[in-house]
Length: 80
Image (tube, rainbow, N blue to C red):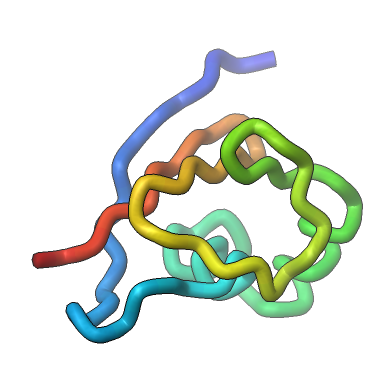
């Protein structure tokens, strides 16, 4: 298994938007290409949020959340 790669990802959320859905985030960072791929990956238990398996694709992510998928860890940050 390759080593875990960790990187911060700055989302394009405006200051008045406090969250982004997990499936949208996975598309945003390039883990998947489509919403269907995101759905399958999440529902198969292959995605963790803050260290716990997450199976709800509509899970709202907020600044500071850490998402692990396909050997990479992403930290959600908001553009200020």
